[in-house]
Amino acid sequence: MSLELETRKAQTTTRKVRVKMPNTILERLLVILSRYREASIAVIAVLLVAYFQFGSDGQFLSPQFLGVVLRDTGRLGLIAVAEVMLMITGEIDLSVSSTFSLAAYVMALMSVAWGVPLAVGAVAGVALGVLVGAVNGIITVRFRVPSLITTVGTLFFLQGIVVSIYNSQPIVTPVQEPFNEIFGESLYDPRADSLWSWHSLTAFTPLLWTALLVAAMTLVLNRTTFGLHTIATGSNIVGAKEIGVRTDRVKVYNFMIAGGCAAAAGIINTCQFGSADPAAGGPFLTLQAIAAAVIGGTSLLGGSGTAVGSLIGAFVVATLNNGLVLEMSHISKTFGAVTALVDVSIKLRQGEVLALVGDNGAGKSTLIKILSGFHQPDAGTIISRGKEVHFGSPRDARAHGIETVYQDLALIGDLSIYHNMFLGREYHKRILGVKLLDNRKMRDLAKTYLDTLGIEIPSVNSTVDLLSGGQRQSVAVARSIYSSPTVLVLDEPLAALGVREGANVLGLIQNLRRQRNVSIILIVHNYNQVFEVCDRITFLHSGEIVLDASTSDTPEEELIRIVKSGLGREAIAAAAAEVQRQMGKAEEDSGSI
Image: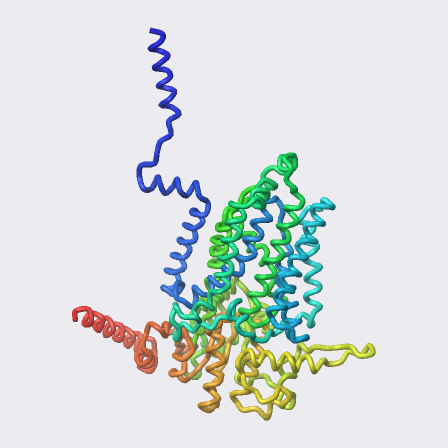
């Protein structure tokens, strides 16, 4: 009797500890998400893509916008995966953003000042990044200084060096193929090139380099002694030391990896943008990389993290950063009894070229002057990079990366081209203690920069009054681009230009559009030229937006017909509805055939 009772108790106990196996698809999916951190982060990334795709009217997954997101994913991913290795050991590097800037500056300076090939300068820049990482590591492990304090000190020290070079101005780098194509130069034109072409591949080379590094780091963490010792150091440093792991050396090596990867990311970023910009590696870049690592499953306490997760985390951060660059919502403005704008709302996405069209007096200039800080709206808000801003002056707008090129161009005819390029931000040198203009440096930089943008000028020594209208327009645009704006507003850039000069200016805008580094608002009257360079068209009439359409979704002839169909919202709306009806009927007829 007692034996049977004991047997039943044993069976009951066995049933209580039995693990229930997942039966449904949902249960199996939840098990996978709980077991693999990368899978859960990937689900979040997919949901974000779906959200932005629906929120952008299907434009987010277009090659031009997705290309920008993947470009930033590559830049952040390079730094994030290096931070993962370091964070696994229980340390952190906040100086990677300054290394990011300094390495690119070294490469650009060696090329421009000494004629050193970009490839050699890149190697020197990466070596410098590794050296910075080694110094951070040695100070941290030898002197027992917390890595947070060590790297913050390095951050400010390197930033001081960067801003002292070239008066804190961007250094334009020459184009040396195939180096630029391999390391970030985008030659992709979504309207002319196939997604499977070489030009398409160049648009994604930063991401490909990052994916290669992620694969290498994944192999290191999972299949090498160094990776095993890295995890052991962060998980239980005392136990690792007792077993014989050289934990100090492991940490120093990971600091060196972080510095080298940050330097490589800065060099690739310079190849993308064509210049080494001291503002490109601000502290916010470091915080974004750390956020990408944490989102990807890396623990801030050490001992845990994945390289693949950091890449997915970088994609999430890049997706959040590249939604809308600018949004003007419900803007209204009156001047006495005259109503200039009524409840106007526009959106501008990263790298987009938006055409703002309308008759004289439609409100285009007023809207642009509000955006540029000359006027303040009576009602409405302006959101730049996700934050509400208030522009009390043009200086405030420029501080937020908004540059405007007006019809008068603001060029000084009696000054040379290169003096106009650097007017208000001149380079200087001291001779016997006297501060003088460094004309040679400004001349060389102006020539290099104009050549990079594809602007043909006989000589930068020529005075502006000797240039044609198209050349003057190109110089004005180049001067604005040199300040690395987020949004560039071009007010009637083709006005009073001949066919050839207008084609040159359109070519410059097309080049900027292909690079997708700056968003452009283009005010034009010639509707035919809109379709050559613009992604979207917004039509203003009597201070109201009566049409906002994509140039790729609507045929050129039909869109011009809508705009010219009559004066007033009702006439244009009726014409647009008729066009949509005819297009729908045409699709039905083709489907039935």
